[in-house]
Image 1 (tube, helix red, strand yellow):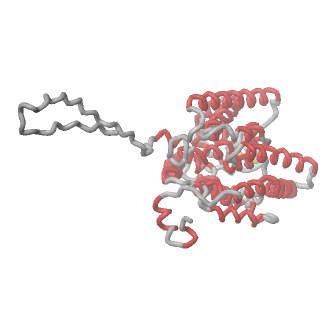
Image 2 (cartoon, helix red, strand yellow):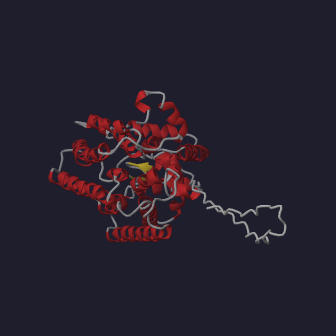
Length: 384
C-alpha cells in the first residue's frame, strides 16, 4: 500500500497550536512487472516463447540429463558398430555424400547401387542435408555415426523435458532405438517440433520440414525454416550447381514413398483437422498427408503428440507391438509387400492411438497474431 503523508491542520490560535510532528519519509511502492518478458532463450525452450511453466525442471538439470542421454547413445552406437563391423547404417550414405563434397565429386554419382559407395538405393537426400553433416564427413564413419546419434538424442532429451519428465517413456520405444542404430533424422525432427531454431534443418528432409511449418505457432518457426532453407540452398548451389536435377531424378524412381492417408482407413487421420488450433494436431495431420517411406524409425515423430507420461508410455508400447506384428508376418515375398505391411501396421497401431490422444483435447492453442486475425473472420475460426 502507498504510504499516506500526514498533513498538519493550520490554526489561527498560535498559542494553542501544537508543535508540528516530523513528517515520515515518503516510501515508494515497488509494483512488480507482471507482464511476461520475452527472451531469446525461450525460443530454445518453448515454441510459444513463454517462460517455462511452474514445476518444469530447471535448465541446468535438463542440460545434464540431455548430455547424459547424448553420451549414452553415442557410446551405444559406437559399441554396436564395433561389435558388428559389417553393419551399414542409413547415415552412412549421407556421410559418404559429405565426403564426396570434400573430394569435389558429385554425391549423386558416388552413392548408389554399383557405385563408388555401394548402397541399395540411390541418394534420396537433397544436397542441403549433406551440407549440414559435412563436418562429420571429416571423421571416420563409426565416429561420425556416434556423433550424429549423440547430438540427436541430446537435443531430443532437452526438447521433450521443457515442461517436465512426463515424455521420458518415448526413449524406451523401438523407434528411438532404431533411429539411433540407423543414424536416422527422426529424433532431430521430433526435437524441432519443440525447438524453433532447429527449423534450420527443415530442408534436409523437405517433407518433414513442411510438417514443421504446418505445426508452427510462431513466426520465428517459419523464419528459421525459410532462412535455413535459403542459406543451405545457396551453399548447395555453389558447391554443386546441377544437384537439384539429380536429386529429383532419384526421387521419381522411389515408388515406396506413400502418404498414410491413402492407406486403408488412413482417411480417418483427417479428423485431426478438428483440432486445428493445436500444434500437435496440425503436426499429426501433416504427417498423415506427406509421403513417407515404410520404416520403424519415423514413428518417433509421434512423440510430439504425447503430453502425459501415460500417453508417452502408450506410444512406446505401440512401437513394440508394431515390431512384433511385423516380425510375426515376415518374411514377405518382396520389398513392396514388406513396405505395405509396415506402412499399414504403422497407421493402425501407432497413428490411430495418436489421433485418439489429439481428439480428446479441446480445440485450443496459440496462433500467430496475423493468422488469428484472418481465421477470426470465419465462423469456424472464432474462439468460443
